Length: 241
Image (cartoon, rainbow, N blue to C red; front, side, top):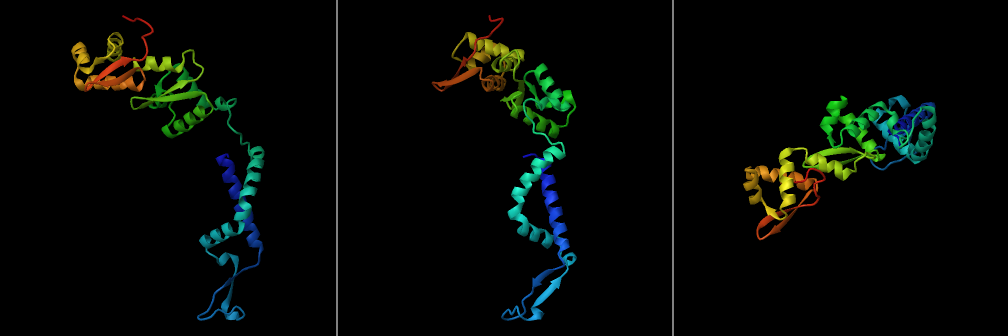
């Protein structure tokens, strides 16, 4: 249900209820005296005009009084408000009619695998608004996302490259990561020790790149004889040694 339509509906209901309550001359509140209550005695009954009731008590009294009618009436008013207030349901056909969503979508299509921060910098849209529009684009099937090594990346659906190829290129955008992947591809079952000897990099650096490759589903890790052995899941498409 549209959030704006719901707020309008609830506001209108409470306004109507308030007007109705004002039209009633007074509210009768029974205040029992000490001892056994005797509603026949006039000193146990005190009459308040509607404006003498505190807003908090008035609010809860209205909820209790009108709650049975709130849900169906809200639904009716929301439907009517869709016409009278120009509220439209977002669907795949009109999702890109919004200028901001169109800019976000085009930025993702031009930069497959772009991150949230990069989209924010490219479009100038603030973080909370960007998050909202990305959620709508994903819901309507225009984009997809994947978390790769602690960062979420976004891909446009319908691109000339399928998402696996986009992720493949994204993970290997670093020459060191690509070099390690090539070595694993040529030496299935190699260990971290082999990679350290080949690259001359530290243990922690090798581990960082292996985690990146694993998060992109490019490398599998099998533990054999107290050592991790690495296997490439996908053969390099181009420039393979």
